[in-house]
Image 1 (cartoon, rainbow, N blue to C red):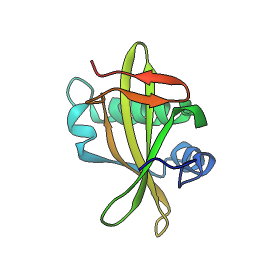
Image 2: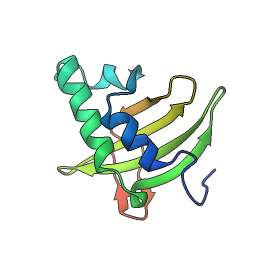
Image 3: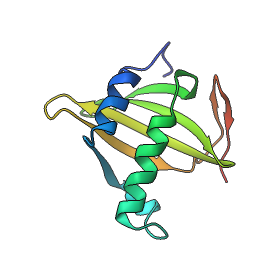
Length: 116
């Protein structure tokens, strides 16, 4: 269900990612980036994309079994990306749960992010 704004502060997310305090889950994250990217290239790509996010890329907040995650849609060089993330306060670090092209069109204030 959509909310008025993200659950996690985008500023905090960017600070943590900028400091290298983030991880990308394998299944719907790294597994879809590697190959063609190497692990290092994939991590740099994800970090760079997160630094590009603005409030206008926010789509919705979703409640998961163990966390509350924010979903963003971002277009990078005419390719849409679905980004789901949360902050693990125990570490603290950003957990990038999903990072892949969207399976359906996503509507954000910045515009529509389309699947390939």
